[in-house]
Image (cartoon, rainbow, N blue to C red):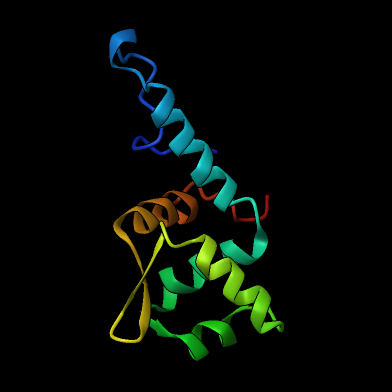
Length: 110
């Protein structure tokens, strides 16, 4: 998987301009959010169909347990916004899903 530029600088970036510890921790947090298939389902659904109401978003995923679904929504507050009763991707969420679903998508079967 190619690491999005907003998470990691190109190889030719001078050492003094590379990510510091706080930035690396932020990138690690984003990768942790993407490590669960339910969260990826939610991101893909919002990317392809959003904005969606809670019930539409839940119906788009394979999660039957409401509590489990709510847990994952809370975990993804950095990547998802709720506006006027609908869920959408935040700017960071859009960047991430574009990287995940782009032409070189890691989500496509090989």
